[in-house]
Image 1 (cartoon, rainbow, N blue to C red):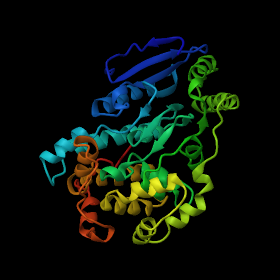
Image 2: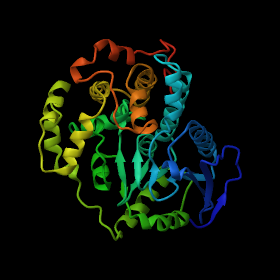
Image 3: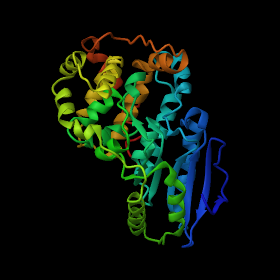
Image 4: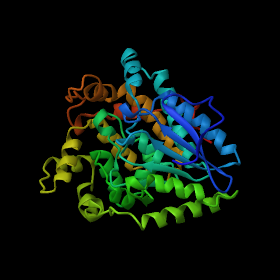
Length: 383
């Protein structure tokens, strides 16, 4: 980046998140948030969530700041998700109980996501490399989501006994046909063309265009009107998109929409039967099948129930539903076992609570979807 100066407010800066401002020719500033945990693929922990929320709220009120950029350090990832180890250890220590750690982490993470969705000023996410789970929650909330030839985007929660949270109830249900259900059940990794097709990305640039983009942003004629700034940023990125060296390519998902809709049709039991017997020459589809079949049967049910929420819930109502499900799944679902198998012991041999789709009792699902706060839900008045 050129002309980057340290933000005068360093109170919320942590070593894991860096806040800077980029000076522009117009006199306005661009606030730059860099996730700075390269070795952990910039996974989010609670301190990072809190630091980002505090700084973004300051910049939201600052009339000099016209635009926000979210970026990740290193070349591997924007953000690979949430750092769930602390949640795992807390949940193991209080087996079968909803922990304060889960309540606090998920509430504050979702409030950050909601803040981005409703920010007003342009928010650009440089979605280069891995963008998964909590990272996709951040990107989905941005107004300008830029992907590159290296982008790998997924909601892989089914592999750890969770479900696609961080707003997945909102953005997955607004995709074409049964695409959201497919992505939630299979943890399929989207490339840039796929992300643009399903509406998770707005713009495509090459990785090497990053400096060019920041230089162009520094010379943009930023105004006091957010709507005008949105338009000018759009036009500028579109112009850069027309000059990329590496083309976006074709979307596998777009070419396979009809097949995916047929695979995901009917009841959850129908889908499991169909996927269990699926044979295809497409390696990507076989990988999706295998990931699905190795996933948690509780997660299958949650993803299926989530898909039935449709588009009738507002964004705030989606986060309210998710906060209930997420804190409960840590206590009553397969979350701890999934995290153990993938991240703690790393044996990749999870022993799920129930062996198949038909073994999951309705009572367990009802328990997961019942608010532990009763009527006093933290998101009853989300704003």
